[in-house]
Length: 222
Image 1 (cartoon, rainbow, N blue to C red):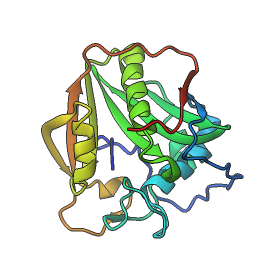
Image 2 (tube, helix red, strand yellow):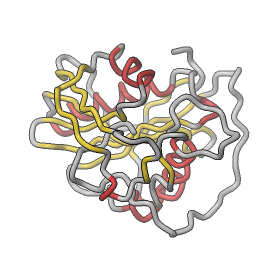
Image 3 (cartoon, helix red, strand yellow):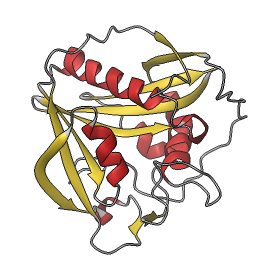
């Protein structure tokens, strides 16, 4: 799990609410294609929920280095819970390819800090650099829209590869450690002692996020 503050249920309680299916668009991993990064709308909630569940809790045969299979079971988020994230002090950025959401990240204000939550990319595009682009966009939005001076996120303790990934992007442990938030309904740990480690970094000088669509290339190398 990347990016959830202890004590709030902005990531999904697992539930029985069905997520309606939509036609899947072909994703060409070897050919860079134009994508759009922009602020999501409540109507995007079903696509965002589907993406997050595919990225973090996929079927066993689906490959990917960000999922939590073997650590946590259960649904990660529902469309209803995504819809509840569209509030003052919370924004969701999405990357679209041919109109389909292929990446997302939430920015949540907390006084003079912002939490970077719910970073997810399509399993077919993981390792191509769009996660890095989404983090950069989220950080810029946190500074421009919420005047954040500190950026935070939470990572499952049993994910050393994710900890290393965020360390390369300037995040270091804050010293705050919390038990896995079972009470938030974000799944059931299958490994004892699972914890959330809080990471942080100073916002510093970051590019300003412009409140308009940003066009980037999908499939850049990380």
